[in-house]
Image (tube, rainbow, N blue to C red; front, side, top):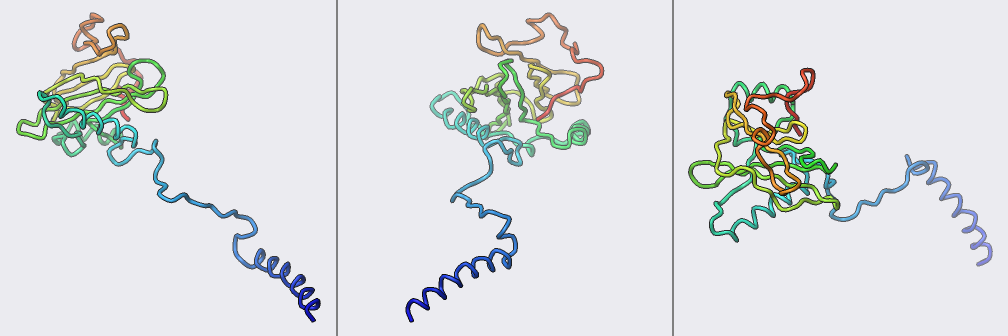
Length: 215
């Protein structure tokens, strides 16, 4: 009797497995995907601010380090909402589709790695902006910030990049911009126009090229 039961079980078990393969949708062609607990978006995936998680982390760490300097004002990362509305800004928004006035990325020191520039705004009265560049490292992280501008008016302006030049525009309605380039010898950003002999209103972009590079 026991032998007959075992023979019956041996016959029915493969039959049940075969029936499951053909009757359960997708079981025969798809493998189960196990998602690790706590898995989140890729570190390279931008959030609504335009920054990736590694870029946001580098900026947050820079803010956390500021209180150690008693002379440093209280800052926070400037966001899109800190920009004053204007016809010029509306045009840029329509042109780029995704436009972040106070954040832009590119290769600013020519080493083939992605860098980014971020503006910060003072939390106290006055609303002064401070601009920093974070140079990319080989491991995918970023170096400590290189501060380019401090206590400047930028509510009506923005940041952009032309090739390896960071451009700080205080007011989009005015023909005025400050251009900064990386000096590999002194390892700092210097006035591109002062060091190259270009006029303040000089434009070194090609006539057919885009006037500005965004994120």
